[in-house]
Image (cartoon, rainbow, N blue to C red; front, top):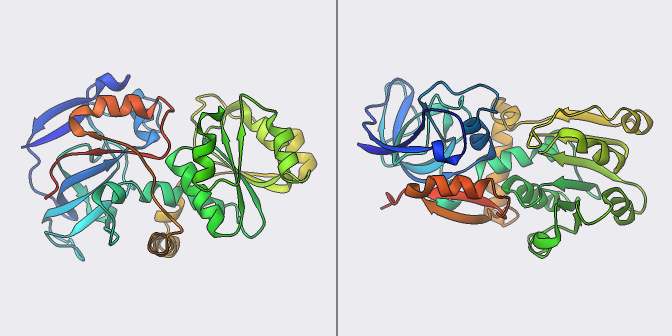
Length: 332
């Protein structure tokens, strides 16, 4: 038996239910793993609320990203064996599997060996954030001397984007709602911090960039605010939208795009891990960055699995700086 989190209806964090359930044996191309730590993602909160790409089929498992130890492997599994320490990539359809558990069945295709020298908590935090944040390079071509504007900069992906921007020689500008997180963002690598509720964002961007504007915007929010972001951009800049946290329709910023020759494009991390040539290249970059210190996972707070409701409440509070991780107490 294992503690497993499921939902029976969509709604707030309170719909997350912890149950004792048998896990069973892995099927073909599947493994059973003991979960030590679970990385939380905003997409899971959206799924729980019924606002994700596909609605949950009830009852639904929860969870995308985790670190732990393999206990059993199914027929056809190659390259992994019981006892291996592994991470789970969030590359399956939400609800088909679930890592909010002490033990879970997951597909072999989702496994990556745990990077050396990382704790389970750190290992559970890295893949979604860094594969997503490398969109500033793969989609935005950010490089030496570029200004990169990063809304929701205190999120795990926002901090990852700051680290990657610094690594490639770009200049990250953190965008956050208030000045409460400004000092922390500067300490974590932002070159500049702009507060959207306390300043004129476009004017501040132009001041920082000497009137040029930013070449890359990496936005998880979408919605009407893209009009403002577009006005802060440089000629032939790239506006990358990788999320829909606003919950509102995203307009096309026609005049800014037309006059400046802007490019607007979407981005999700699966554009890396669903393409083998990109996956290997960026996986190796992440491992190199972790080993070299250019990439450093930032953990905002940890919760035990018994406090999964509180963990989701904190996830949606916008208080955190970095990744929220849930632990199971199963590590040995």
